[in-house]
Image 1 (cartoon, rainbow, N blue to C red):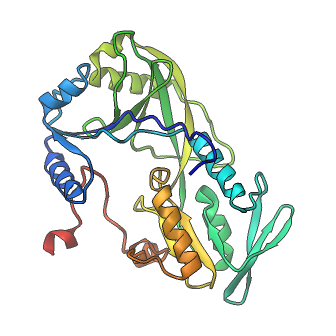
Image 2: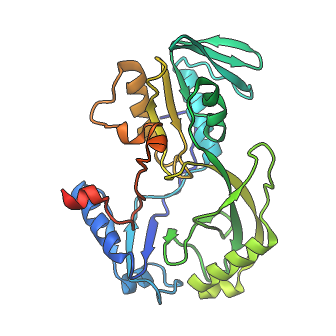
Image 3: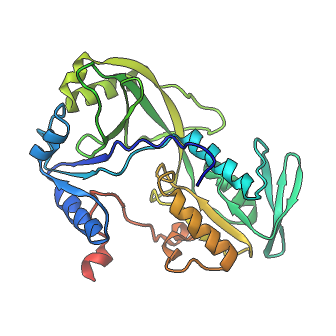
Amino acid sequence: IGGGDPGFRQVGVLWLAGADTAPHLRENVRRAQDLGVRVDLLGPDDVHRLVPEVSVHDVAAGAHEPESGYADPSSTTNALVTRARELGATIIQYVTVDAILTDGARVTGVRTAQGAISAPAVVVCAGLWADRLLRPLGIEVPVTPKRHQMCFFRRPPEFVSHPAIIDRPHGTYMRPETGNLTIHGLSVYEDVVDPDSYNEGADPGEIFRNAELIARRFPCMEHGLSMGGYSGVYDVTPDHEPVLGAIPEYAGLFADFGWSGHGFKHSPAVGDIMAELVLEGRASGWDLAPLRWTRFREGDLLPPASGASPPHPKLRSA
């Protein structure tokens, strides 16, 4: 898109599944291949050949996406901001939005710490703080700020690199980082914090737990070195899926938040969808109704969605 280097590194992504989730992974790989995705189904021996340092004693199947990788979030954001400005957008940074302004059942803009901004459409992408902006409008959306800890480990010299890995048997995920480092963390945390004030480091006990888990998956990491860690906060919804689309109670109000830790990778496609929805009134080819904000009060939560999750009951019966 221009605007600068987003720091993308094509290291590939490897899913690991145990015997309990391997059938789901195989079926999801088949469906992805039918859609044209370049993803390969691997057996334990294939996984070991791909990453010789890995222990596959509890792995029944793997899925490898060689074209995948990771990007640097700050560099990506700056690239998007730079290109948006080049195309005529006005970007205002480090200014707090205090409220969404309305006139009857229509949005009229936002009130910020530096004054009001008039607008016929407002997209709430406030993540951890989205519920604070919507609650005064009578829109109650549960967003729980959960602290996730990530730990750095330096690999021994003989362990050169590895793909990004989603390790379902261990409930962890990891990716390589420059300097012969691996960033490693658990998939689920229940540490609810104040998003305006929380410990941004990693707890000593959590570093120890992650060290044990990474050494179990890569025995050679017994000779690795802990390099500390950091914490961030996810905007988690009850079903771990986002609130996306128009909020019909107010004309001109739209939502895009609650991604629960998986929004970055979806953002290019979702940006296109939201732009079309705001400008054209509909996103052709996309049914956003399952992601409506009212599903929480209606008890119509979405099922788990991941590479090793079972299909939705409606799909099984179709």
